Length: 397
Ligand SMILES: *Cc1c(COP(=O)(O)O)cnc(C)c1O
Image (cartoon, rainbow, N blue to C red; front, top):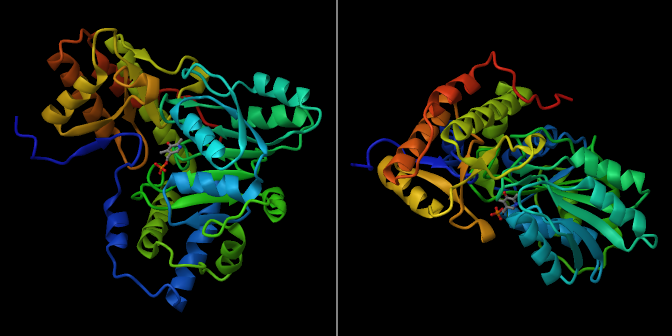
């Protein structure tokens, strides 16, 4: 089959497809980052990014991948030797805890099964037992991209409050920002970490920190040396729309247009579109008779679905088959899930046709690889995409 015709289907859970108006904005001539024109752009995006995090406070934008924004959250708020309570939801939470160790912090990890989210009850026990307040921060991943599990951050907040614990709350929203309802202010989050290349429909290259007043206070007391990622100089320059060093000017031009698109669709509608695509995908997976990696319905991710293959079948061979036959990329299994699961991304810029095309191409791959599957998956997905069907509504407020 000739796979060079048609467009490539990028159905991994980030980086995601960029809408043409965003790409066109990025392709505009680079402008002077000290000019009045840039200052206006800076003020524009720094203001309009706030509602995406549901915050009234500042959002810092770095020219980094999401990993850089992870590091910024840790180095600005914590001091060497500080204990951080983390929860093992999967690959990304594990990487973040390894980074904490590399930065001379002391992460304490509550073990997880890579099929469920943060257990707020276990977190509460740990915090109640911590009479000396040794934990300076709780750091969790909102949407675990390796497993397709979304954790209840409001429940994490309640666990901290009920224990009367002063720890900061740091949350990674890299694969949920702009796709799954998230509320930085209402959930009392101190640092929210984001990235450009998933729900925001931009190429990789921007990292975000939404910061609370408490986090800024903590940053003044934190004793860890930092320079490039230091919030202080950023916040001062950002007040006029500028940056202390050359920002990713063209990505910021793209961000402005991505925000236009999200505002035009309406954030609640963006969330509903993701919910519907996720529901349709799960309906198809159920019809195939395959197992979803996420165990509990309440924790199903709206931005991706990780699908387990029956024993004896290689998920990587299936992905390669689909790449060959349909020119479509799916996410691979990470860490212990390598070759065991494949991940279907349904986030960012997509529509019903892209969801159905993705599922049909997966079905072609299952057939070609001789993996037995049930019939009726596409019909079930069409049903799931119907606007009259009830979906797991994400709280609008
Ligand atoms: C993609 C992702 C990251 C890593 O971001 P990079 O941009 O690759 O550095 C971290 N956490 C989560 C939850 C992610 O989905």
